[in-house]
Image 1 (tube, rainbow over the protein chains, first blue to last red):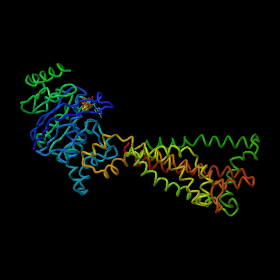
Image 2 (cartoon, helix red, strand yellow):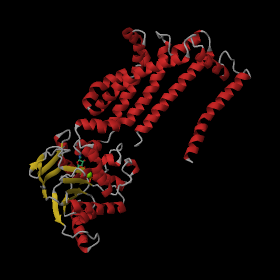
Image 3 (cartoon, helix red, strand yellow):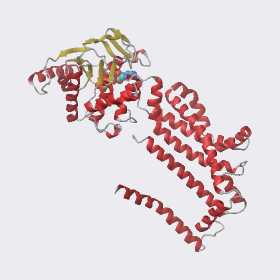
Length: 250
Length: 259
Ligand SMILES: Nc1ncnc2c1ncn2[C@@H]1O[C@H](COP(=O)(O)OP(=O)(O)OP(=O)(O)O)[C@@H](O)[C@H]1O
Ligand SMILES: [Mg+2]
């Protein structure tokens, strides 16, 4: 049950035809089930747009998105999304945020609670279950946000620069945390980031997009064993290749 | 430690009022302020006692006036909130509805509620319906505008996040739009109740049927030249307004403790 994009193109229409912006240009790739797949590309190249199309929050102008062979049209239960700025509901406590999706599915309260409590324990949020987001640090907020998505057991987890607004140390911790969680669950992850180091540290494959209108420049295979060493020679080599490709085009 | 500072803070907040009353009493006692223009605090206090014990007009004691006034405000207020909150949320949600109703609301809003009195009497006669309608008009617009603003101010990402968690339109309405707009709704409710209370007293100046109401009480006191009772009545209006606002503020602090 992989994810497949076929000739996905996105054009934002302006007031006049010549003001139309072509953001994505025939994007075509496949992600295997259980794969950790990253997308990097210059700012404004359309990474968020691409993720929103896959999530069903926006529509492609041409082309289609297939999940497990069936076309995705609109919001799809099989997909979950983690947003850059956490997007937690500020009026809901940690546990209420995490169980929001289960609530939408009309799961009885007791089951919801116990499922959410499991995530709270596994995500190191004990003691904060009844706090509101304002009382949480950035790293905790993002863990709540990830828990809120994973508790729905989506087949594909979409993440749009989830760690971009965190400080370095927290970011590293959360990268390690995410990889440990992913290693156990083997979700299919589509991870957007600006940060090449992060992509090399986390991913099975990295797709590099060009400037707008975005095309795929290259897809790198990262065949490094985990846990990875951030500073190993092989990591550095891949990092160098990706960075060169990005700077050549940008 | 925390309690202590809070207590002394409360004391300090009331201090200027005590100083003002003391100052006022001194000026009256020294004869600097003529008592027929502005009675002294002691006289006002005695006037208040008369309002409670004898009533104004006699036989119509203060607490009945208060109850009648509160009842009128409550009625107009509840109707206004019940209509303005759902409509405000709908207008925040639907651009079409905003386009449709926006201009009408902008036209009606600047008309002072008191200017509606003649029409209101024509429609409802003199009485509770008419009074409640005037209050309704004073309360409706601040709640409506604040509610709409509150919905428009909700981060669209939160709506998308709810969508990706399989929220239906109904879920979005009840679990995102309403809670997200609560801070603004509460602001509107507080502004509204203040306006409602002020409007009421003014509306009662122009006549009431049952012979009860704080505004009516003050006008009666004026007719028989009792400035002490006028001022006592004014202070009662102020204190009740303060209490209502305090109550709503407590409710607000509870409802938006997540802020
Ligand atoms: N609703 C819209 N209407 C018109 N143009 C849009 C719209 N949304 C996005 N764009 C344009 O599409 C381009 C891609 O935006 P997008 O947010 O997908 O980029 P991104 O790669 O995620 O950028 P960043 O790295 O800064 O997050 C941008 O140039 C943006 O101006
Ligand atoms: Mg983006």
